[in-house]
Length: 205
Image (cartoon, rainbow, N blue to C red; front, side, top):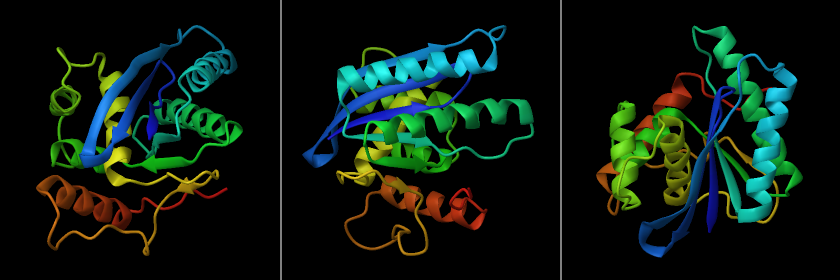
């Protein structure tokens, strides 16, 4: 399964593609960042991101798109741009008839580090180790995009052929205990449940 991870951002949008195989093996296909200048009109910045996303979809042909689920932040201007780019990525997946998955930041951190509150440097280091890279993916947006793709690979969702958004719900919450779970899987399950309790629900509208 080939997965495109998208870390949405208006100034920097991280893109990372990995191939996932049996035994939790993941390999790097490509990683990069789409940058747009702050002095460019907002609609043109979104267009630039959309064009790059389309180019990656056309050339690399992923099987699923994983996007970071956007949460409200104190910086309203920042979260607005991030949400707009997330919408562009979701639309690109729909137009390509690809499954779509949304993952919370804590869920992604728990999946790759075992800690839902890990710092960005920890995420970068674990992404480097998992993909056996010679150096940390840089900037952090690139590492975050790869972490999203890895998280989705290990979660195992979004493999269907139809377009569907995975937001989860009471019937899809992962088990946090039992045999056969790694420490990272237990941490991810706890982070996902915590995010749901905090109000990370399916966006309306």
